[in-house]
Image (tube, rainbow, N blue to C red; front, side, top):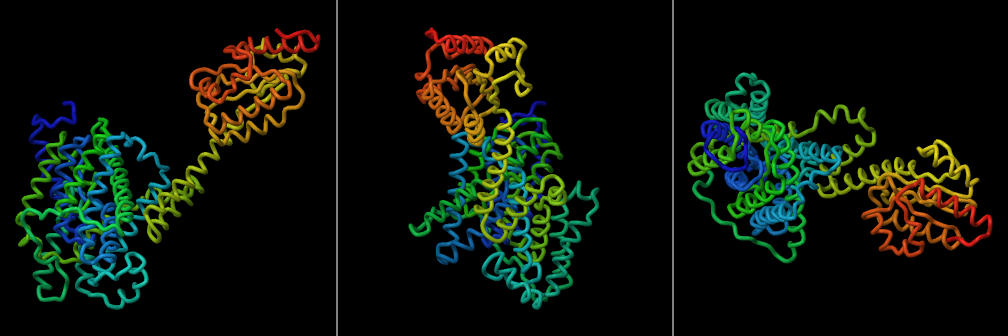
Length: 556
């Protein structure tokens, strides 16, 4: 059966089974991310419900499961911490407003069809960024994993307070945390196919904590509010508006990247092609609703999506089913979740952080590319210790500069200026003969490939190397694209040649290349018959011009 973006009920059994299974996978992660963010477990549940339902309803990837993810949780954690420090009374409400802003930006990205551009980032930058987020998520779990309150100051605060945390470990909490991680890692693959190990760990370790450590002093979730959420109206102050807008763009961009990368995974499993711009609009609507309901921001989740597809889902009905199952949990979750130890949720989130790390590329990046490896580790460190936006900005800038340099060097090799028949350019026997007849008085200036701005130096270098000649044949036949910088360099070379009394013939300038030269006023410098299509005919005319000049006869 063909999988489409239209919701239908022809695969109802598979979609319901996939949705229920995905809900079971999502529950412990939603609780863990809610606690880790500082907004509370119910915020994680509301996020899972709202993002999951509306992204499935309006998105462009039928089998995608959307929910709060590790990367999104890391970013919103920093936003909540920053805004509550600035305004303790309204900080959390402003953080939910940032979630709404992120959704609005995602809708804008989708409307303007920017989906295909958002993931056009070098892999070394994406790898470093995601691995950095994984490291942050791991570091944020250290304190609750050891039964301690998290120090202020985010990652740096935790790193600086490590000696104090290690000196005041709550042994019971640590035991429960270690048990959680051990169960997740050691659950046999046969069992994993039936029940997610995170849920097993959540239930088993919580029961152990109640049976053996019921009276111990360990932090638990406690009673959470049930029922429908209270609407969070947009809240902001003029002093914080700029920060909130920047945070909204950052959160929205991360959600787009996270979602579209997961959508590619879904495509590979279902052999379909997602609609990236529609998906961004769906994700944006979902995050706006989640922010209004006091939920965490979300994105496409790889684990939930893979489980959803593997259990038979084919349409968005599975995503809707998953959200409705979680809504039932939210409406009556108080008695079920209040006894869960914080150390258990920290263990679950810690495992997510470890999974986010790009182990495959970390192990072999130095073998693939030393420069790529340096960029990846640089972005990782900047992500962890400086700022997410700075990390991506610096990484993309450096990676693009190195790429442009490499492309420019390659393209520069295609810029050739020859006055005799050699092997620098693939010439026909007739063209070689014509160059020989000119005795060095005709210069063939050959360009090929995309003329990006980095090639302008090579054009200038070859032009400056021109010695004495009477006619320059500028061959643009193999130039599909000519940037502004290269165009201006070519214009300068043509104007200089004309000022020195040299004849210039342009070959192969058509379409946008010709239009660019017309706009620069280059073609008005030349006689109309000096704009030609065929190189051999241009060389024939050049030789005729040379002969006419040597005989000192008027040139027609």
